[in-house]
Image (cartoon, rainbow, N blue to C red):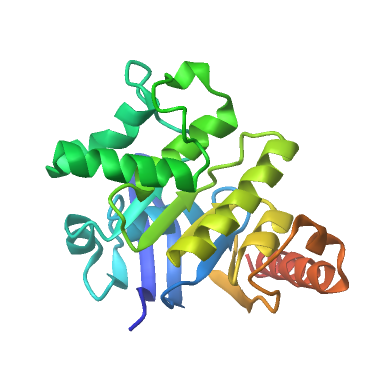
Length: 257
């Protein structure tokens, strides 16, 4: 069964200036364990679609299923973790305290919380920083803490809305490598929004190219690259050819708008 299944999904926002058509006829199937990146110009509906999967927005047409359920039922079943563009950490809580928060809300015992916090902090290479406060960490470390928080209750799906967009290129490269390692270790299904062609190509098993508003999928590209990807793979002919295909898909979307 597909983890995420969209059929004819449309979403129109009603505003004072008239309707805004954010998504139109989006069809997509995501298999368990895939790493799917969504790429397209600003305002094309990438984040809107991710938020629809997470039941943060409600489609106005079509059907959308997450683990065979409607998105709101999947949310109640804790089917996914969500990582926003900014870390969103509470400054008065330690890093361990921030990671613990959703576990506290869900009613996990103190022992269970401690075990899960230790495990996810090790996964994101933050062991030893649990007693620090967010303002004591770099931006990259804060974002890793945000990822750890989303992983803490062990959902099968991880939704990530351009989590590395505000970071410098060196930190971004390191976190891309760390995210791939985490994905291979956990086997989670990842939905990832980005504006970066190299990032989409480096990370993904499937790249979903979207058009300008109203957001439509213009091309779905399955990556031929191996799961084990050192940063140096970006210099290979295969990587460059795949990046060119994504760029062509983006141009094609603009031509159809």
